[in-house]
Amino acid sequence: MSLIQSAARDRKKLLRIYRFISIFGILLLLTRLFFVTDKTFLFLLWNFFLAGIPLIISSVMIQMSAQGKSRNSIIAMGVLWLIFLPNAPYMLTDYIHVIFGNYDYFLLNAFTFSWFAIPAFVAAIISLNDISVLLRTRYSSLLVSSFIFIICLVCSFGIYLGRELRFNSWDVILKPKTLVTQSMESLSNPPTDYHTWTGTMGVGLLLFMVYQGVKILKNEVE
Image (cartoon, rainbow, N blue to C red; front, side, top):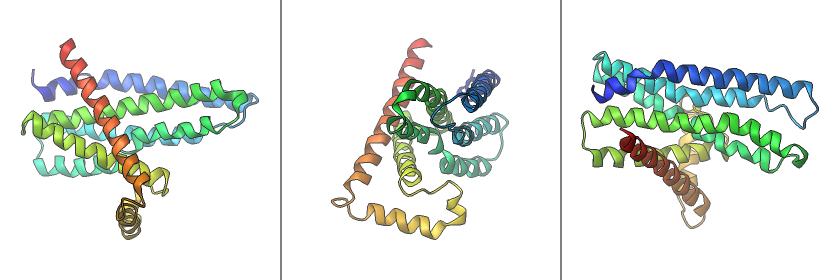
């Protein structure tokens, strides 16, 4: 069985798992509406929806490749995937609402955010693996790993743009000039903007290390 066929095989099972996570998450947030808590955190549903888009796109790319679709159409989907990818690991930054929230509800809030944030991060890793599978059909493992590392850095900077500068994925189309200008300003002076550089490098490296770790475990199991 080829890498593409293997990656495409378990998509229905994966869809069922995320459907369960979504339904239980909705029930969890609805429960918070009827009990006295500090906040409802309904925005988690929207963030989780956005976090699932990269996995949906990479799954479509896998299917397109398995069906022999044109390379240009797959590349176009890949660009769209990269734009939305930061939304998945971004949910880990939502823990600031737990850290700076009401400590009377700390455990409940931590559980609520973990229910969404951890699957979202896993979705990012699975999606990265999908892209690496597609790339490995054409390029060497070393080149693919290098490319994935660059993607992780770009994704990490995208998280910074979303959390600190409050940009959204669709601002690539709606506010391209503003997005490029503020991005360049944030990166133009490393000594002054060291937090941007260190944060981007740190989160990007973490994302890449988790991806590599999962890949190693998967190879050992197989």
